Amino acid sequence: MTYLFISDLHLSPEHPRLIRGFLDLLKHYSQQQTQLYILGDWFNTWIGDDFHAAWLDEIVVALKQFNQQGNQIYFLAGNRDFLLNKKFLKQFNGILLPDELTLNIAQQRLRIEHGDALCTDDIAYQRFKKIIRQPLLLAVLKRTPLKFRMQLAQGFRKKSQQSQQNKSYAIMDVNDDAVADAVQTVDLLIHGHTHRPSVHHEHDKVRIVLGDWREETSAAEILEVNQQGEWKCITWPIA
Image (cartoon, rainbow, N blue to C red; front, side, top):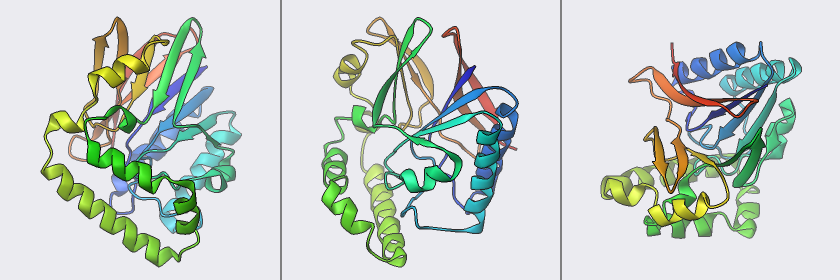
């Protein structure tokens, strides 16, 4: 059994190479028994499970084949695709996970999450997240026309980019106290979101930050864990 962890793919029709890189990954790992964990920001924008497009259909077909070969897909939401829900995942027997989850693999306890909840110094973002994730507001959003949601998502993305330009790297990175709390009862913390792939040894634990998928470097930093609990970071090539 292989446990594979990826994050921050930001798939969209504007970046076909990233889509191809993901399809290549599915093809490669479909030949072995794999549990694939996608830790948020799978898509650059997700406006609802009622959205359909040819580029997305190609991904769904590949995911179905991946699942039919005995593999499993798990997904937890990021800050860009929190509207992705069970309806979309059901097409390929994907499983929606809570925002934080602890996995037991051999003698190792692994905590997985997107990573944005650890960035507690970014007060403006945390305030926005608390508002936009309210169940009542989400229910209302899902009932609005697709065109409206698309315009709303584009507006949010633009404001987010402008906001990030005015913030320091320290504010947008994880908070040390938040990390200390997160690793209290686990051996390994795995997350993405910050786009700063690295392996950190802190608080007598290991924190692995997955990389965002980049066309500029033609690579992404992902994590593979075997059934003995042994892990290794891999640079996945994007052709």
